[in-house]
Amino acid sequence: MSPAKRAPRKPPRPYHHGNLRRALLDEALVTIRAEGVEGLTLREIGARVGVSRTALYRHFADKRALLTAVATEGFRTLREQLVSAWDAGGHDDAAFQAMGVAYIGFAVANPSHYRVMFGGFVHAEVHDPELEVEAEGAFQALVDALAALQRDGVMRAEDIALMATHVWSLVHGVATLAIDGQLHRTGAFDDLVRYSLARLRTGIADTRKA
Amino acid sequence: MSPAKRAPRKPPRPYHHGNLRRALLDEALVTIRAEGVEGLTLREIGARVGVSRTALYRHFADKRALLTAVATEGFRTLREQLVSAWDAGGHDDAAFQAMGVAYIGFAVANPSHYRVMFGGFVHAEVHDPELEVEAEGAFQALVDALAALQRDGVMRAEDIALMATHVWSLVHGVATLAIDGQLHRTGAFDDLVRYSLARLRTGIADTRKA
DNA sequence: ACCTGAACACCGTTCAAGT
DNA sequence: ACCTGAACACCGTTCAAGT
Image (cartoon, rainbow over all chains, first blue to last red; front, side, top):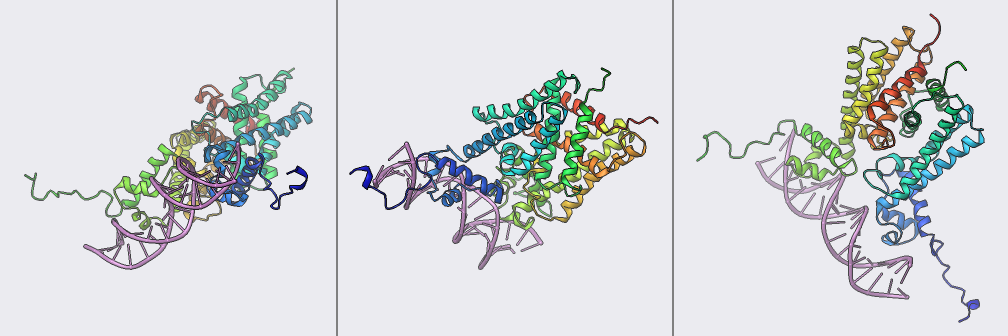
């Protein structure tokens, strides 16, 4: 049979040839967004993608491996967005604020990803090297920015790991409270982000005479 | 043979007469602490307490109701510890730092409670009045302290809800990162808590001339 | 290689029945 | 009132078998 005349009567499934993995990940994200991580079932994902319940095990060792892949992807995207904000802003004080907005914005825009990244579903004593690399990379973007600002005399010249973790804690706190619907006591969300980042900056700014 | 005539051969179960609820809650906490909220199964709790799988439904409507009860209890304890720290410290600047230490300390000492309180297992659009009251109470303890400090000219006279949420975000961020094992990049945990609370204070302190 | 159905050992929850 | 066993409709995962 020549390739020319063998047009298949049944069009091949779009996930064939290696993109089943991608389709499963996308479907997982949609499901988590709609029903929470708790509501994620492998069977339903398979059904939605149009594949048997066990097809998923060709691409992921188990359910946790799926979630680890989601988290890994999330850290990579987060790092990209942090670096973008820092670079686009010109590596100065305002760019740092923009990084903070980008961090919280990522979490609020991708709550499914963020919850899997930090919800304790993955990190509990599991050592996935790829996940570790991406998580480290995102943290490093923050460290790099702070180091530059310290060099320029904008921020206090203090232990960089302590300062970066302090900053991370604040944006992580705002992000998780927002995602978990705990901010109904406060006014507009944008006002909170602006206020919180301004107070953060005051707390770590270098106020010595030049 | 028997030690005494009135000694029952089968000692009565300790959970009878109303304390089965208490026993179930305690066992749930132990299990969550050991295996995470994910690993909590009603059947195992029943078995551990020495009761059938369905006995639990006499005291809780369903699994979520059990978790809601755990969360409610957690908010109540948290409020008590925050108020204690604030009162014992004499309602001043140092007492506020002590409140911060108490908040983070509660989370780290009671990760099971804390995870259920904020892990998104309960709060998603569920309106439990008792839970709401206790959560509000804990937040109010923070608001009250900040209001007093604003009155005394220690903290900036800014929107109290914004400021309280900012403070809450930071301690919540430190607490959750600690619980989720994300702070291995930083040095000693106590140093981080001290540093972070000091930078928080600088950020919201009133620096006007008297 | 990639996918499938059947099967296994679990879940949360309901319910008729016991004391 | 409080507790029980049996039953139902689900899970994640394994495995022999198909293409």
